[in-house]
Image (tube, rainbow, N blue to C red):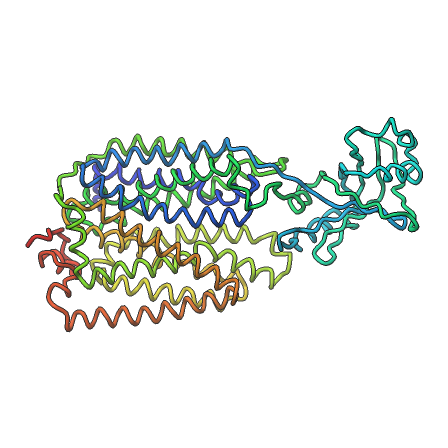
Amino acid sequence: MVNLEINKKLLPMKAHYFLFNAGTAPVVPFMPTLVRQLGFSTVVVGTIYTVLPVVGMLVKPLFGIIADRFQRQKLLFLIFQILTAIPFFLIMFIPAIPQESTVTFHCHEGASNFRFCPENGTSIDGCLVESITSNENNASMNCALECNTEPWMWDTICNYWNVTRYCDEKNIPADQLLRLTGVVPYNHINEVENCLYFILHEGQIDGQRVPLYCPSNTTDFKPLCQVHCNNEQVMETISHSKIPDSKVTGLYQFWLLFLFLIISWAGMAVVVSVGDAICFEMLGDRPHLYGNQRLWGSIGWGTVSLFAGFLVDTLSEGKMTKDYTIVFYMTVVLIGLDMLCSSKLQHTQSRLSTNILKDVGQIFASFRIVVFFFWCVLIGFGTALIWNFLFWHLEDLASEMEGCGHSTWIKTLEGIIMSIQTFGGELPFFFLSGWILKKIGHIHAMSLVLLGFGVRFLLYSFLTDPWWVIPIEFMNGITFGLFYATMASYASIVAPPGTEATMQGLVGAVFEGVGVSLGSLLAGNLFNRIGGSATFRAFGIAALVLFVVHVSVQALTDRFGSKETRDGYAAPKEATENLEDDQPIVRGSLQS
């Protein structure tokens, strides 16, 4: 009979990981699409998401030092949970920036149409056009146009459209706007040379049907018009911001959004790093059990993110845009519950460093710790490629395989991928990370993670059918679950007493603020130049080369390095020797 023992002291820590990750899961994955829905371009979104990791890089070590120096880990932990939830919630109240849909109306040689030609080098989504024209049978849509006119145009409306009331100048609208409703059959929408043409079947002015006829021997009737059609996909295609990207910084909506995102990102960064420091303090001489606590975060994220997506789709039925209201309330409620559980943590910060910067600085005298931080940066490069470009790569493959037909199932596949990454990859490896680290040690685990990235990236590069990505996603356990447990526990072990939060903040800043940021920049440029498959192949080969280099360097260090170098850092030998054996790990002091 199995006797299960529950450590009640650690239950609030498990609850924190579950609730905090569950609380951020409803908003973080959807935030880029929400920002675009507010009317900001992909350029603005990309710029914002370049700055946010840098914010995390700065605040993690800064507030880690503050938490350690003033022994206020738990207080900062609770304060920054508030600073995560409230700004996220306030984003819900930011109004969208003004949008316009400008088209050119053309009446000539007995036919009428209006056309949309995108600006700034952008192109029209061909699959969206195919969806509009092929799924509506022989139906039509109505488009209301408001057109800027010149005086002579009213003669055409009077003489050829037979709207006699405008033959009298007194009846011409004071704003000189022609208000016209056009009927456009869906099979009369065509894409020609990156312009979308809407051929009008008939028109109405003030409820009167008009022929929209202009003879060829008259001046071209080509006013600019604002248009609104009763089709969401059409409006999504032809709408754009009235404000160019160069002038977005003059909008209060931009600065509110930027401010709220920076505060929330800083809040998440500090909660993660200080929370991990508290967790390792509570684990004491059992840091190998960290993965058993952290896996509850993966459960919270994986469960709630899928549930939130379903709620957004359900509550948005019949609306022109996605309604994200529910996810903001979910975030506030779940992080509120997290604060309640976190306040119950039985944590007392007993260690104190009198000179945090000096103590932390001393560990960099160890070659192995320098290699560890360099390893964190390299893993950040690989993580950036997966986080930012895996779905992009799969959608490109799907488009090549099935053309526009992939749009009916690609989001389903992406949902399956997220589930497998979480439940099939991260969870088992977070659970097994303690056993793995005790068996093979942190150094060999670092090599294994590099090998995992190399194999994973090469497999991506050979994909032709995106559905074959499913078995590859189980490797997320090695490339994220084992990696994160290794990074966090190694940083805890090498941290001098009283610098635990500082070290967790420092490794998190190096991983995300340096590795992920630079990795995103490099991967984005490579994707643009050589394509997805070649980018993953290049990253895969680089990861395998680095795996060989890492194994070789560590082997040479073991063979020829000094005793302190072989141990991993200049701390008492009993602590570092335990990095590679099965004994409980005891954190030592830098002072021998």
